[in-house]
Every structure is written in C-alpha cells, then in structure tokens.
Image (cartoon, rainbow, N blue to C red; front, side, top):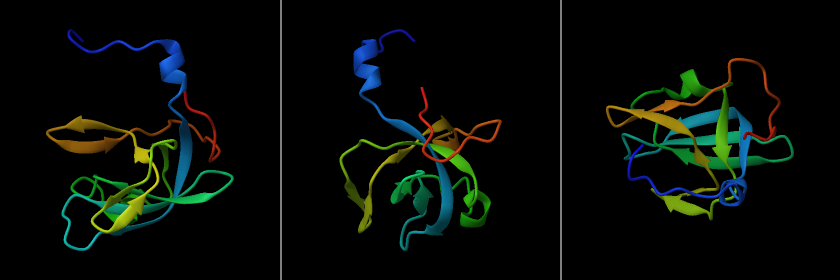
Length: 111
C-alpha cells in the first residue's frame, strides 16, 4: 500500500507472534467492544483484551486457535491488564479474527 512505512526483516522478527487457544472469554463490563480472553500459549496461560465483542460472542470464540502478539508491553484496558494483542482484519471498523485453516498447537511460532 502506498505511503506505508517499510520495515526491515530484522524489525519484523522482533515481533513475537504465536498461536493461542482461547480457553475462556467474557465481556468486559461497561464496554461494547472489548472481550477478556484467557489464552493457552503452550507454556503459559495469559490474559489478553481484544476489541472483537461487536463481532464475536464469548461462546463463539472459546476454543478457537487465534494469533497473538506476545511481546507487547502490558496495557490496562477498562481495568483489565492485557498481555498481548489479538490479530484481526478490520472490516467496517470491526475486528475479524485471523485464524488457521488447520490445527496448530498453542505456542507455535507464526511468521
């Protein structure tokens, strides 16, 4: 896309992307966009807040294997600490999950 800042392969490799299985999901009180997810990263479980509540119900996302950036600094969103970012495509300002078309074990590296 024109005008996007280009990065080097070295910069890209600094981003840690992992397959993560959603163990539980719940709506965050007083937020129409955010879900609190607990994900299995193979070696640990982690809480991640995702702006996908307008697209997915908690029941719909539970059990899915998604892609999470795991080396972001923690951020507090609506009082919940998020330790990662869920990858989505954005359509009409709503997040559509990036998922795998085959089984991928939690914690697998995504490139």
